[in-house]
Length: 119
Image (cartoon, rainbow, N blue to C red; front, side):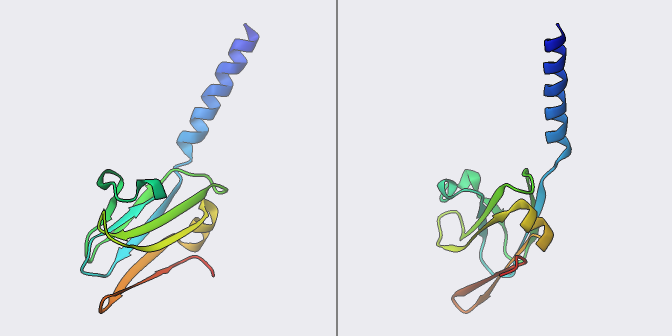
């Protein structure tokens, strides 16, 4: 009986800890005339279902569930099927400390991507 109560308390604490850690918000700034897709995994690229889109001229903050030591990939493409223009991974703590911001601009046909992470 005591083991069951301890297990139940541990399970409730785990759920509560996860629910109370909302993760981080990553801001994508699109200063181009093209739709940009953000993917969190390379295997999702090209699947419109997993494209977190940022319309031309739009700034969007997407929330992702993670803890400070988890790796978080930010992979950007032009549209769901277009070329990859950015790929960078850092821990969630590094993203959060840096301000978690990725900005995409365009000069002619070239896309220029900067982020808030230190080099």
